[in-house]
Image (cartoon, rainbow, N blue to C red; front, top):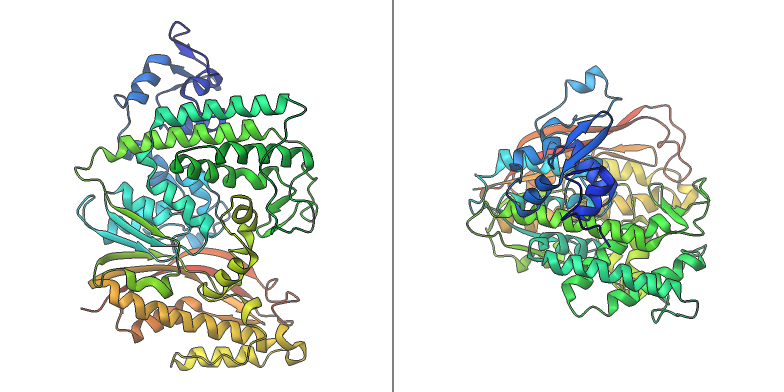
Length: 524
């Protein structure tokens, strides 16, 4: 139980303050460094006034939003490896890397390899949207874990998103409705969970009712036997909660940390720890890890609730666990002011496969058949799903794109579907979906509405594909007007990816991989 300081010391250490406000020491340390909580530095250590913390929790001492998020104003747009030439290309949009979200309330809940930064979205909304709370509608067709939508809500805008991955959609839903949670009930649930786990783990005879998901397969046991027993008890606790919203939040909490105590890791794709040069996890304090996460979530929910009191009307937020390309017609025509998104890149990163543990262990995917159906409905498909299909013809009438697809198809014919033919099918399928994206988006955008898309170039079979330029050209075919393009991040310079055994043949050409933010305006 957290200590009772009603008659305790007036000045608290970091550890005491963390227990007092029920967050982890790591979380409180980050909040202190970002000046999001009242505190002072005494030498190398933080000190907190108990009364100031009580005022802060009650909202009386809540910093203004601009003060609560100094990282938005101070974060470097590029990391320390940025060269002077790259610095000249910095723009007001800023870096899109998700890494900055790891210290931002709510955004930090779920690590997401495919996400982009909250700061980037905030900057875009400042430039593209009206004043906060002005009835602006914001859409993200590939919402991920909700960066765009959450930033829209924080500015008082109505938001709408599509996300085909059930785990990402669940995480997004819980974030968007975080302000509706009863903090007292959540705190009570966290204590009940800790007591439940202590009682179960003390007993040598206690057996969990939950069972490992039957459809989940991995080359090595995903959890050690000790860790798996603890996870199954966690699932027992989740399943006995009567409140669906609490079950959802607990699932998101478990999903966000479960890989950390598994025998797998993201490098960046999901693979065994052994393959990444790490030792397996034989034992872990699952209860402590989850309680720390729940305290973090509770603190962030309190922040959002206080933040939203600045708006007279609460924003409306919806997330659909569906394919945007197939179900965009459920959105009223000409209802969207601003669209901000980052679609899957032409890099064959299998977003669904890399969340298999969460999908199965959280009971979000009943069968492997659903996993396959999801892959077939995904934007751009995946190389594995189209490589052996008959030749996929390009539906976009742009000569440059056709030339690139033909160049890829001509590469390495001796490798069969692993050569140019398979990768050309993948590229053609991708650009056909880009065409469909702009077709459905035109119907939803208000005249003159802004579309900002972050997308990067790529290399297939040694052929550079300037996906950002092609994506914009397809948009122009559908009547959108190109406004501007910003180089927001340079990811890598070199030829190593060009010469990989799967993607390419040998080449001496140096290609810079980058991400571009393209801004187009909907036709009037």
